[in-house]
Image (cartoon, rainbow, N blue to C red):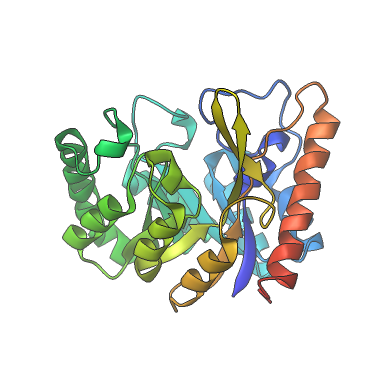
Length: 293
């Protein structure tokens, strides 16, 4: 099992998707090549990245990335979402365009976020008719891209993003029914649709090609609770069980650490230091406790 990182882990360095309407109050602080050098100092072996990690969108630049990753024996996975009227449009592509970028930079897996719009209440919304109509559209889009998938050999991984129950992802995969189309497991996201996160891992692990290996903490407050990012192994999710389930699938040969930390915004230096320290602790947990070597 190889150990890598989702670039969202360094969000406060300005190298990842703007999420939930949040914008950094400072400019990007790290290039992609600097990030590839940095992760190697931590003993990491690859990156799961979206378009915000790219410094520019040019063919020659993509080839430089491909060659550098190959020379350094780093794996790359490309992360994009289907076009929608919400979230960060800079990381949204038609499937053919997303696959073209993935292939150009040398990624062998490309994660797709379905960008579903769900009705409330979420807890009663699994397979809701409005969602089913969107899932059928996803099936059509992916199916129409299968010739390209086969031609370039980049596997597609549909994520249980914050908008999908794991069983809905499986429904889509069953209808596409293609060996190069599988799942991307996010170990936290299930809870966003009121699904037990470990249940989501149990359901998707046998069909997955890649993952976002993420931990969160639950903090009780007078008005409810706060579900917030944590270094891997320092939150309230069963990361040991999640890893046990993931490693049972021979198609899953990588773990991608992902952090979504709340960092101080009155100091860029403090925010970036917080991310780096949590990443170092996450790597140590994966190496020392989970024995990912």
